Image 1 (tube, rainbow, N blue to C red):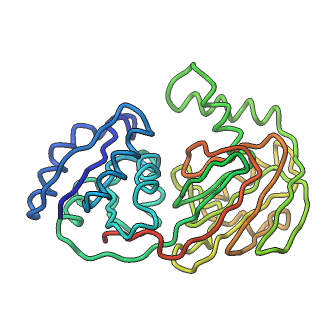
Image 2 (cartoon, rainbow, N blue to C red; image 1 turned 30 degrees about the horizontal axis):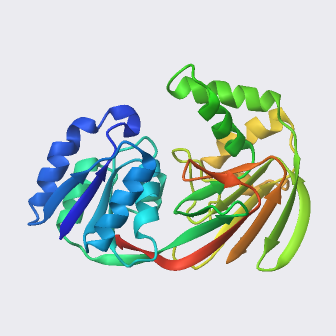
Length: 292
């Protein structure tokens, strides 16, 4: 393979940046050519990936879910082989696809050329013209508001910023009115949390849509009724086991296409800001040609 390695040295708080030379060495040990691609901007990284696909190269990402997300924008629907070398904090997409989570073992598996398999992806389009792919989960409720607030904060840096954002959003917690259409079946409801998943988890193991299967051609949707602060926080630990969906105040749905609208809500997918609602999310079977 002629590999374009999209590497993000800041993924996982930079803890694995020093492994980049060894990752390259292990990929090359399989007889492949490897060029490291880095760009100063996210758009630049996507463009580099798209150019690699146009040149007939294999795209491999080294980083976390955000880096994978950028790679998906380049390869989705093209048939180009795509590999993942996890080097982030959560690596939810790689984990749920059953890929090696150790950075160097993942590079070795790609180098071994174990073949490819088709994996579903979700495509989201916004009323503002935004179009993007995602592999894991789209958040359009409480967790999206936490991300939005944390991205606006300049202090503190690191995990503490998100902890403070969670506290602030809990204090501001209120339900919103949503309109949702699942394969044409429309409903309207108040909610504090709505998530649409192609795979089951986000945020480093929160199994928010525990039954999501990236090979079934369907999206899984979880909706939480209006909840108080205390109830919401008591439910959150259950998300690691996926047992929150057993609570009668949480409903689950499944569809090929999800249309979602609400005032003042911005959607996040794979932890990345997408666009304000309304959005249409469609499952595209086999859109990713995954190595391993």
